[in-house]
Amino acid sequence: MQADLEIDTSGLMCPLPLLRLKKALQTMEAGQVVRVLATDPASVIDFGVFLEQAGHQMLEHKEETGVFFYLIRKV
Image 1 (cartoon, rainbow, N blue to C red):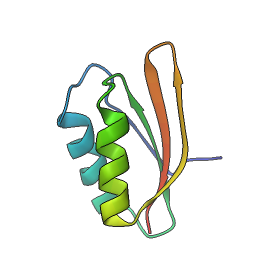
Image 2 (cartoon, rainbow, N blue to C red):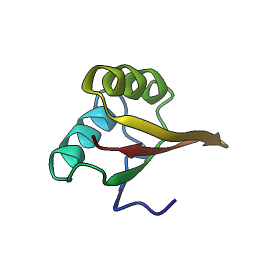
Image 3 (cartoon, rainbow, N blue to C red):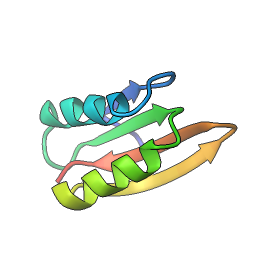
């Protein structure tokens, strides 16, 4: 899936990846997709809780050699 925006939070620790995601979502239109790269294992929990509360959609989540990849649709 093609992302409209990509943010790389590699090397950043909680809460910075979540704050960068929130800031990115504020600039986006409903229906757009952001791809996030993160190395903080806490991002899995942080993003999941935030997306559930905010109502955005996690389209994909995977981890490869310590890097977490997320595709998130703004609703």
